[in-house]
Length: 191
Image (cartoon, rainbow, N blue to C red):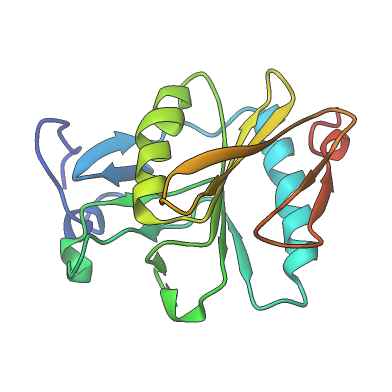
């Protein structure tokens, strides 16, 4: 299939036909190219966060997946091939095994992590923020490598994200959603 055009709306059925040589996301049918491999610093942060989360969830019922990992976010009763939103967060935590299949996650995971880069900042802080909130993802971690900060958003009782933590070097990340989860920020941003 040819390269997706931004002026056309696509579905997960279309997405499955695209070349594996390029990574894409769909948000409300609009294709977004994922770009080349991230920088070394980004990969280091991703690795440290993934290891910390994987160790915490090892003896629990939740599973942790690093990108690339498809998260399909259907609207109401969309059939799988008709889904118009497929994203690949940097890290995904899924606690409901019924949402997992051979293609990834179908439905809202419990938590997602996005590591902000200059090329993804607008999408991660706007489109994806609103999408994750609307989809009911309980917790959203936003990692800012440039500032060595991790912001944590939790859904409140009205279904809106509220920033509950902003952790920087010298501090520890904790989670309202997952009691006992603690990650040393210094480890995430170690050089």
